[in-house]
Length: 407
Ligand SMILES: Nc1nc2c(c(=O)[nH]1)N[C@H]1C(S)=C(S)[C@@H](COP(=O)(O)O)O[C@H]1N2
Ligand SMILES: [Mo]
Figure (tube, rainbow, N blue to C red):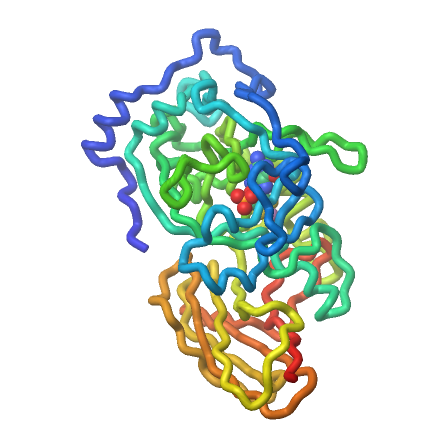
């Protein structure tokens, strides 16, 4: 992927200056004074409590406040996941906001002026637009396989493999917004925060969803997206503006963005301390460092427990992806891992995207069988046989054992 220039070009700067952000008149905005341009929240009528879009059972499995896509239905989609099939992960519920009332506030001691800077929706749309295809994958995608495949208990939403999707995102560069706001050279962290309701768990109010992001990543390839697959962002995916943090755990891509704190000292939130680290006997006592990159996976676009006819040639399709590098090869086994062969990769591998792959199988014996697939990326990462356990079930990367029945 070509790196973006470190400094906006002339055209960008001219456009940006024309859309100069409004400095706060009062200059006294506190961290809590988020401009909540709230017009309402989704009702429970549509399916999962708090999700606006329809969730037909043939495309989605509802898991609490979340909706998981049925991975097998990606079979009839292209490289992009249609918005009406894209998984939704909500800590609370989708807020229905008005773009006209929306403001982004950038604030904190990591700004030169130390005064909050505001951007309207129109001002953000006037900044130089970038378009990029990126996956969003929940760090917990595949979590239920810790239990079903490895016999290990984990906490969190029991996703199978459908907490992932790919979309074409269009928006402003976070680097442009931070520079316009007066990013200080010694700023180290930014912390984007959503406008959805505060997250309350076990009787404790953790506040609004927010998570620190190092300035280096913020200036690299992060987008403030206002379009998804060529349409305005849908309510459930962060309307009017969300962050897209390519290749990182999904929680980094804060939806319904309301404000961004910029700091000269490291920031933290429950989403970087209590959650989204690896905990357990195999990890450091206080947990690993906060999670950054997603991992790698491959899977068949076939329901678990599918039945296939014996003595017939079946075309089996799947997808493979890695947050670390482009996909190099996908191997498949139809005999539980005794023999492996290469699958045919359909799409040109591009870092940060997935590829579709296919293989053919003519089963002879009836009865249960196990299909496996294993991706290797261009950095040499390979799916292991087991994922090292962590108590919250993040970053499942092991080869999936896909049960089918031959009849
Ligand atoms: N404001 C806000 N942003 C959020 C979340 C949230 O609940 N609130 N969930 C995060 C998590 S855990 C994931 S995996 C992604 C999911 O994005 P999607 O719902 O568009 O698929 O959004 C992230 N951004
Ligand atoms: Mo997530």
